[in-house]
Image (cartoon, rainbow, N blue to C red; front, top):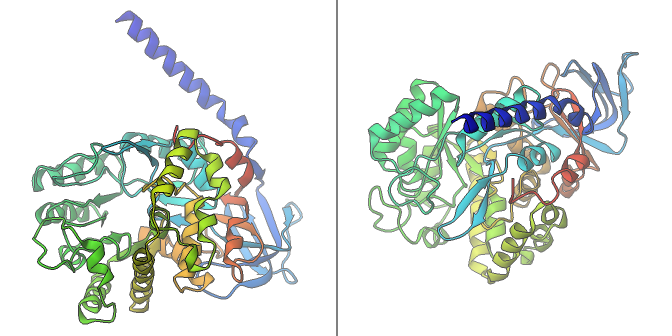
Length: 479
């Protein structure tokens, strides 16, 4: 016992010493940190869907936006640290609404491991200043990482923690607890809410009674429930009271002929391929979701990475799937696994048609008044990585038919609204937190310019994007 106590004490001291060293380490990643900062001569895409404003000056004071006005009219305080950003665009920090802290490790059955070092830095480096974890395989770690970030001892985005998956019988991975019934579902919600989780995620094999118990227990506490469903169709989940559905159209099983209650059926993709979005069934689902205030999360990158080569869509998708910046942050094993997975994917025109239909569904949902939010989902075959995938999601929303400013709103203000944080974050406006991303170029005309992130402000502190990325080279897939 004495040896164990000594070892634990040593580990504790090492951890505390490590935390004590965080302040000087943090400094190397900061581009600018001052009580007053002026961003001058910059284009502003404010996140509301409004047209961009040219030659603006943003004054940041004590971490908040003090003013946004034309550079000709702006009065820059004499003590301001000034950055001349002519040729650059400032956007709100992205609000990632399907942003796990874990990454696929391969194997059969598949396993997953938390990326507690690499992912927080990559999210922040690529402009994602707020995330919802939307399902956890290491919930204690996620909660502790949030505490470390909030206390300034770790670099990363603001985090909203989702509890472990709420899964019924039939999970494809052992990293998920299997619910034993509605009482177990209630206990899970109560336990994790008490520890600090602020949202819950129902998974593919949950039963209707279990989902109903989850929704009731979460709503009693003022918390929300999302779902990646299969055993339950979208309309049915909306009637039960779910708040959010993940993956756009891809997870809706209600159109499978002769679907059995509480069973995840075969043939979901085939049923969606034959679905007429203008038909009565699809339109009734959309109307139900909108009337019940159910948000939809778009996660297009994970389907792009896992599907057939998509260069035939004419936008250079093959290069997006083999982005060297993404491959360089992967460990050797993670990179090899992903490249092998890509090599096994065979061309399939039907997949392209299904992806296009999913994009059309998201546009129809928004047209009907629905709240569309966005995230990357860094799972699948390992080709979607924190931060990089969030930027790709915005690009794919534009390919889906949204304008660039509409896509930015979906990825920023809409997520903030769902979280109840839109008074503080999600758009560029006087009085809001200075959570901003500075990119070279003009994403309003060339959406791929959104990848040119150079500075990311979180609460008024400007971080050097490239330095953060370089600090985790080769780590994704390890830690």
